[in-house]
Length: 155
Image (tube, rainbow, N blue to C red; front, side, top):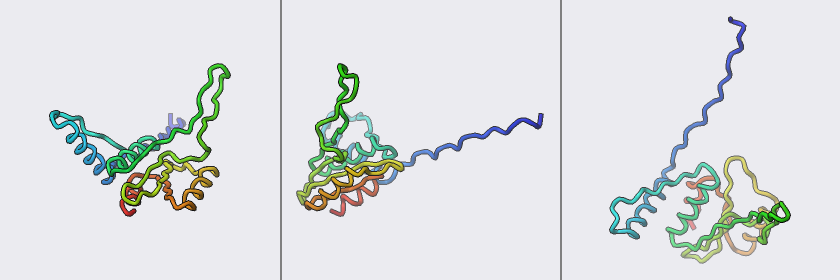
């Protein structure tokens, strides 16, 4: 019986730990909800996380909105054409970032590209970044909410 191979177990991924910046965002969103709905004492708490691209984008857009900035999330995917049975490209320019915003105090144009994990920027995204910074706007590559918050708060 000692000839049996040993079983190789996958290592467990470390559990997600919320950063202090994400916890602060949750407090800000809860405070806004209490102001918006003063007659409802049992509001569900607002929950955020920043370990994947989608939830990180939600953190960023919510924080910008709570700070008074104009903010919009861009969707750059095409449209599925059932007659052609394929995706048709969208009308947006290639390489546009995930979030565009305007700083509430300086009025500067902000472009934020969200990347999670080892994801990298494409050539068209780098070209947009270069054009944005050359025209006087600001561009940020967000990989986590803490560093984004620090960057935005220093503007």
